[in-house]
Each structure stands twice: as structure tokens, then as C-alpha cells.
Length: 164
Image (cartoon, rainbow, N blue to C red; front, side, top):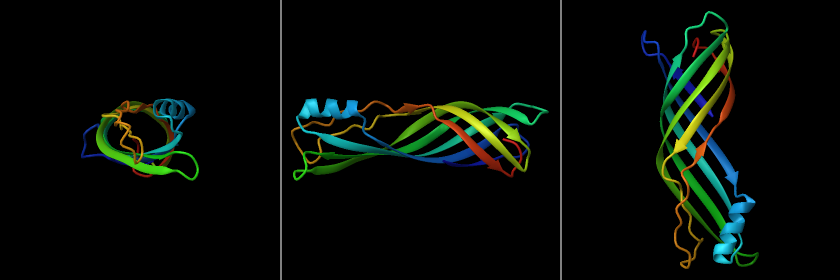
């Protein structure tokens, strides 16, 4: 994850843009459900690339520990890559889509205007879950996936630019 924070004029809020990327492999539960539904073994990997624009509000503080809240909207591109079958008879396919997201969170910054450490937690909701189909097969209809929600806990280093 990378982010940049901007303070527009003298208003007490800040605008923040962040970009994140993550990759996860299929778990055993997904593999078992898929194989029981199709009769074919599968392996899968999901990738999520997102951009968020947030409004952050830092609470007034005279100490080096400064709390803040944030919330905003974003866009995420999700890809599921699947490989189905047994060795020698493998079929692969990718499904992808781009969708909207929203998030709410809070954090604290510890440090000075030159350098600081921050700890943050956000509830993320990505609309319209990415579904999946049987790779390169017509016998398996596309199945809707759940809307991804997650709670990232982020520890980071803030360099320059004053307080959050």
C-alpha cells in the first residue's frame, strides 16, 4: 500500500489517496465446494488492485499521539485466475471486473512533522463480488461471488508533510 495526504487550504480535514494491491490463494473450503459441484479439482488465486480517495479528520492534540478518523470511496479491480483438472488435462481461465468500494476507519499517529509511525484499521467493502465459472467449460454456469469485505490493520511510516 502506498498513500499521499493533502491538506486543502486551512480546512481541518485532509484528502488522502491510497493505492493497494493484494494476492490470495484459494483455501481448502473453496477447493472442496468447487470439486463437489463440478467433479473436477481446481486451484485459484485472487488479485485485488484498489484506489481509494478518503477524507481524514485529525482530532486536535497537543501530544505526539494524534488520533484521526477517515472514510471514503474507491475503485477496485479484482481478478480470479483458476486452473481446473488433473495433471495432463489442465484448463485455465481468468475472470475480472472493476467495481466501487467504500471504507471507514480510525488511526493514530505517533511522532513529529518530520517522521511518524501510524497505526490504522479500516472496514473495507467492495461492491459486487467477483463470480467465477468453470475454466474453459460450458457445463458450469457463472456463480456470483460474495462482496469482499475486509478489515486491514496497517502500520506505516509517514515522512514529511506535517501531521495527518
